[in-house]
Length: 243
Length: 300
Image (cartoon, rainbow over all chains, first blue to last red; front, side):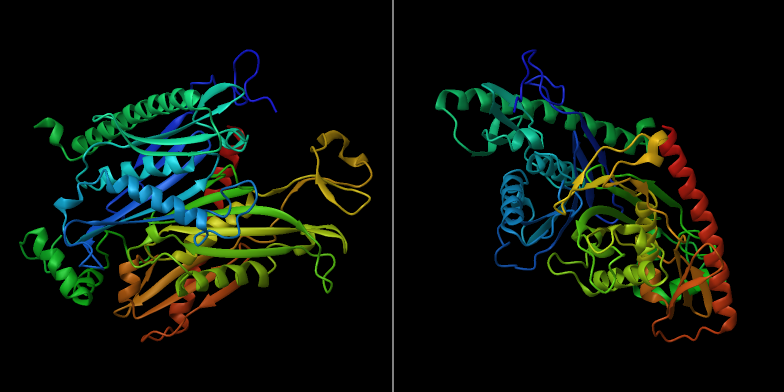
C-alpha cells in the first residue's frame, strides 16, 4: 500500500507534516467541574473532570491529590463493533498513560487529601485516540480551574514510505510503521510522554520525535487560543469585560 | 429567587435547598412553578442531532435539558435463528458513562443502566417498532443484526426519555447497505445500485434500503410531588418525587408502555389521563423536531 504518493501527498490528501483538522468545545457537560470535546480529524473524544473532592484513600493522597483516570471506547467508535469496552488491557494501559501524563501536569501538592477524577470517552476512533484523550483531558482540567504547571499537548508521528508523517490516522497507524506518541509541556519545552512501538533506525527516530514535538506545539497553540477564547466568552457573559 | 419570599442572599437559598429539599420544592409548587423557572407540565428544551458519529452506521445525540445521550448503530450479518428464519435481531445495550454523574462508578453496568437497556429493548421489540422481517437478507441463510449502543453522557433525570429519543433518531436514519450473497453462502458488501435500475437487480444482490419504522415511540416521564403532577423531571426532582410515571406512546394513538414503579403516591385515572395527554403532545412535538432535523441534514 502506498502511504505517500509521488506528489508527496498522503491518502487523506495531507502533506507529510500536516496535522488533521482540530476542533474542540469546552463546557459541554453541565454537572462536571470541567468538560471538553476534542477532535483531530475523524477522531473525536469527550473528557470530563470531577473534583477535586475528598480522597477515597486518604493515606495515599496525604501529600497531594491523587488522579484517577478512566478511559472508555464507545462500541460504535471503530470500524468493527467493539464488544469489550472498559476492562480490556488496552483501555487500562491508555488510562495509565493519560493519568501519568496529567499527574505531571497538575500541581497535586496544592490539593492534599483530595482526588481528581478524569473520565475520557472515545466517541469516534480514527488513530491517535491516546493523544486526543490527553488533549481533551487537559482542556477539561483547565475548564475545571485545577492548578496546572503548564499546558500539555499531545501529538503522534510515524514513519512510512521513508517519510516522517505527523498525526497518523487509523490506516497509517495500522500500516506497520512505528507510531510515536509525544506529550509536551510547551512553556518548559519538556517532553512528558514518549511512547513508541515498532522498529525504527536510531537516526530517523530523532527526526520523527522532532516532528511530533512540532505537532505538539501547534496543538498547544491551538488549545491556548481556544481556552483564551472560552475565557473571554465567559467574562463577557458575566459582564467582566466592561470593568 | 428566595423560596420563602423573604429578602435573603443566594447562599441562604442554596443552604435551604440542601437542608429542606421537600419544603424548598413545596414553596415553588404552591406557586405553580419549579426552581428552574418551568411551569409544572413544561418540558426542558430538547435537541436531537442525527448522524453525530461517522464511524457508526447511524447515530444520534439527544439532549433534554442537561440530560444527554448518544446512540450508535453498528450492523453485522448473522445466520437467523432456526425458529424465526426470516427475522433479524436487535441487540440493545445502555451504558452510563462514568462522567454522566458523580454517582456512577466505572466498571460493570449498574442497575440503572441495565434497567434502561431492558426498557428500551422491550419498547423497541414488543411493539414491533422495527419489523424484524426487514432485517432478513435471505430466509434461513443471512440476516442483519442491529447493535444499538446507547451511552448516557450526562444524567439529569428522565433518562428513558433521552435514551429512547436518541435510539429512535438513530434507527430512523439507519440505512441497510447493499450486499451480495455469494454462492458459497458468504455475504459481501457491494456498491449501491443506481436508483433508476433498481427494478432489474442482478442475481444475488440484496438492494440497500432505509429501515422503515412501524411507529415513532416516545417516552414521557412525569412525577407526583406533594400532590402535584410535574413532567420531564430533573435528577433532583426524581429523587424527591413521591412517585414516577413513565408513559410510552407511538404516533398512532397507541400506548406502548407504562411504568409506574412503586412510590408513596397513588396515581388515579385523572393523573394517568393527564400523563397520557402530555405524552401524546410530546410525541407530536418530537416527531416534528426530528423530521426537521433529518430534512435539514439531507439538504445540506
